[in-house]
Amino acid sequence: MIKLEKLRDLDVRSNSSSRTVHLSAASGLECLGSMLYVIADDELHLGVFPVRGSGPGHLVRLFDGELPEARADRKKRKPDLEALTFIPPCSGFSSGALLAIGSGSRPTRKRGVLLGVDAHGAIVTAPKAVDLSFILDPISSEFGELNIEGAVVAGDELRLFQRGNRRQNDNAIVRYPLSAVLNALENDRSVPMAPTAVDRLDLGAIRGTPFGFTDAAPLPNGDMIFSAVAENSKDVYLDGPCLGGGVGIIDERGKLIAFDHLEYPHKIEGIHATQKDEVLDLLLVTDADNPEIPAGLFSTRIVR
Image 1 (cartoon, rainbow, N blue to C red):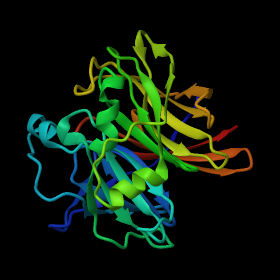
Image 2: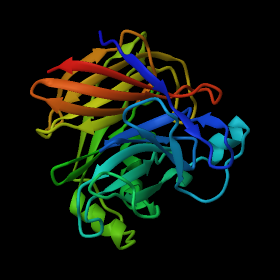
Image 3: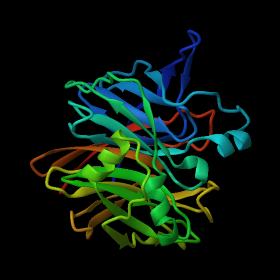
Image 4: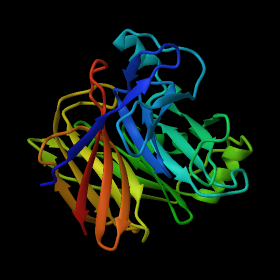
């Protein structure tokens, strides 16, 4: 069993007033330099937090407009950004970029955002909205219900993590050539691109509710660490009670190496890993499934 230590709530300083608010539905995490970047699936902004300390973060707008306050209406209109990953230096971004990716579970959820960063990991470009339907549409027929929850750049590949649910227990890693994806994004090309491979995995279940991927992060040797939860929901749209959570490792070929359950069923939706020798220091963020409750930042350490 893995025990998590809570570090802080994801409070943010409102851009429009002096009051402190928070992110609730944290869904992806990336750590660059001294900053933590967090996306929330019911927001139009990116949350930016200091790695150390508990002071409030701030918001960076990703999309124009406003979302309704009413929960049901907000759910219908949200971009549902679920995955956040770092793109290494390339022709369009000399120091790399952050790429946020929508779940693809609805036609309105196939957008993404690119944000260039400097050598210290600070955002230095305006957000560029991108259409990701060219990689998401070709795999819609591969799964009963498309629901991308994580993304990893490893070597020359972009790997997307498809999340299963109670009705469609279909976890998978979907692989694309990174250079081709970046070329399409930088030049606003929308020609459909088929994946080079789809690796399916069974993560087990709790009381009949299967575990589904919620995020992933790269490890130095090409392996991947991932988070997963057993959420008692019948489809990709509805939320349900979280019966358990876990953290595991998959090798670069797509083989499950390890999967350990959490001591308490936190609904972990974002993960970041730092490895030194055989020790992995992890940061994780939660989705509270309640707009009144702030998402939390947690840590733990595991030995491979």
